Every structure is written in C-alpha cells, then in structure tokens.
Amino acid sequence: MGLSASPVSSEDKAVTRARKALKQHNHGLRGLLPFIGPAFIAAVAYVDPGNYATNIQSGSAFGYRLLWVVVLANLMAIFIQRLSAKLGIATGKNLPELCRAHFPTPINIGLWVFAEIAAMATDLAEFLGASLGLNLLFHIPLIVATVITGVGTYLILMLDRFGFRPLERFITAMVVLMGVCYLAETIVSHPSFSQIAVHSVVPWLGNSQAVTLAVGVIGATVMPHAVYLHSGLTQQRILPRNDEEKIQINRFSTKEIVIALVLAGLINMSMMYMAAAAFHSTGHTHIADIQSAYQTLTPLLGPAASAVFLVSLLTSGFSSSAVGTMAGQVIMQGFVGFTIPLWARRLVTMLPTVIVVWIGLDPTRTLVISQVILSLVLPLPIFSLVYFTRRRELMGVLVNRPITTVIASVIAGLVFVLNIILILGAFGVNIL
Image 1 (spheres, helix red, strand yellow):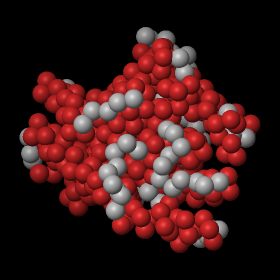
Image 2: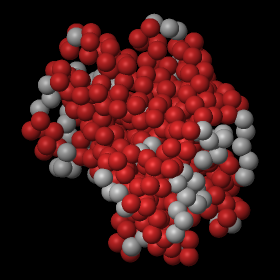
Image 3: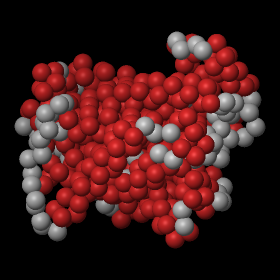
C-alpha cells in the first residue's frame, strides 16, 4: 500500500489465519474474518461528508424520489470495487502502477493529473465535513476546527506504523458506528417504508436540478480515489502462492466487498430518506446545507437526533479524510514513482479547505460542487480498470468474463452520459 511500516503481531496473526482459511478451504465467517479490512477502508469513501451534502439536499428537495440513484450508484460501486480488489490480487500491482507500466507517458501524466484533482476534491469534502461537525457540535471556529481535523486525521494514519490490521480495525469500527447512528436516525424520523420501497427501484429525473443532484450523488458514491486505492490495499496483503489461492482470496474479497458496501449503501439511503421524512414531508424543501439540516433537526426530531447526526458526520469526516490521504499516497507513488512525507501531504491537502473557510464560501455548496467534480473524473479510472482486468496475460485465472467487461463498460458509459447532460445543463441546454 506504500504506507505500512514493519509488521507486528496483529498483522502476522491476520496473515496466519488467512493462510489457515485458504488451506482448509474455510468459507464460513471464521474464514472470512482475516480478510475483513480493505473493503471497509474503501467503503469509507462512499459515506464521506460529500454524501451528506448531496443526500440531504436531494431528500429535502425531492423527497424519496432520488433513492433509486443511491441504489444504482451502490450497485455500481460494488461492481467496480470488486474489479479493483481483483486487480491487486491477480497482479500484485495497483491500478496506478499498471497505468505507469503500460500507458504512454503523456496519457499516464494526464491520468495522474486528473487523479490528483479527484483526490483534492475528495480531501476538500472530507475536511469540510469534519470541520463543520466540530464547529456545530462544540462551537469551535471553523478555521480552528480545520486545523484540529488535520491533526486528528494524521494521528489516525499513524496507526499504520503498527501494520495494516490496527488501521483496518479502526476504520471498520468507524463505518459500523455510522451505521448505528443512522439506524437511530431511522427510528426517530419515521420514514415511509412504502415510499422507500417504490422510489428505490422507480427511476425519476424531473428537472435540471434533479439531474445535477443525481450526478452529485453518483460522484459522492462511486469515488475515483477509492477505485485506485482498493487495488493498493489488496496487492500485497495476502500474497497468493498459486492460481487456486488467487481464486479463494478473490472469493473472500468479494464477500467482504458486498458486506461493506451494502452497509455503506444503507447508510446513504438512510441519509436521503431521513431528509425526506424530516424535511421534505414537513415543507422544509430548501434545506441545502448541513448547518441548516442540523438546526432544523433539533425542533423537528429533538436534540438527540441532531447530536447523533453530528457524531456520524464527525466520524465520516475524520475517517474518510484519513482514507483520502492513503489514496493520495497510492496515486502519487503508482503514477509517478515517488511519494512525499505523510505530514507534508496532509498539510498540502488542508490548504484548499483552509482557503474555502478563510474566504467564506458556503461549505455545503462547495461539498456538492466537489462531488460533481469527482463524477466528471470518474470514467477515467473505470475505463483503465476495465482495460487491465480484461487482459488474460495480466489477470490469469481472474480475468474478466466477457459479460463482466460489458457491464463495467456500460457503467463507465452511463457516468459519461450523465456528465455530458450535466455540462450541457450548465450552458443552459436542457435535453430532458
């Protein structure tokens, strides 16, 4: 992954247990546990503060009607992250490393630049989210909260000095905590489960604002940096010694991805239907920022609901900011062959957020825009991922089936078309 120091006992135990599971062909929960970790780290990218901004705004403005976008985006995420994890298992290399090895230099540099833009947009969303949470919960000035967020996420990343296992456990616990928070929000907001069921499967895009938010939801859910990172998390974690072990490790990885991303998908859905139940159904259809959501939740659902909302936002911001920095290291090392010290990268990635806060830009509007930027960058890593995972000389026994390549290409094409609609809409051309 590029961040690990010398392994310690928890890492050795995980590898030993994984080897035992492979040897005994154990496919139960005990066999799966040593493989739990990479997908939960990647899943944090799917429940970052950018999701709060787009989901709350979507639920407030359109009620339950954009839930289908969350479901679609989550299915896309499961499919794409599975390909990324499989790439690392099959080749022992991550996606940026393969791009550098196989693409001409101009293309590789272009991909790196766009990947760094995506990483900066990601860091902006995550830093702003955690800073807003600290500001609203503890009434800390936003600029001070930004500095605290930077220091806090750096300390989280220091767990990697003790091997991959402590950091994996910490991030997994954060995802589970977010799930618990939104289970509580579901209980107190009393959403309409019939509406949830209908609008989770019935597509609707009523106007240009809905299109913008739908693209933002996809950009906030299927994350470019997570596509790059996941292959880095699996490439050296449990090294397969033969083709049979590659197949087994990939099966365990697929199970973990489904568990982690289904949980992330349920959290995203609950964000939107909580906003639909608490805001849209009560006539508060213009809740377009996290501050307003927090302030409106208190009189509608009580102080406990707003406090739980901020705890989940803080958890999301701190954990996703740490994961974003990890992804940035993988991207830089893979594409251009060098890294900068972790503290330096953490400092540099803080700067856009500090500037946004300092000049007084609306934080939530900035979050939504950052997610649209991510969606615009997204087709590039997906097309690269499809290109490599369909090549038998690289993937061996884990090469894509033809139908897998077709589905992945359709996903990339769908994202590309949505982006074209978004760009045309920005110039006043409404084709819906």
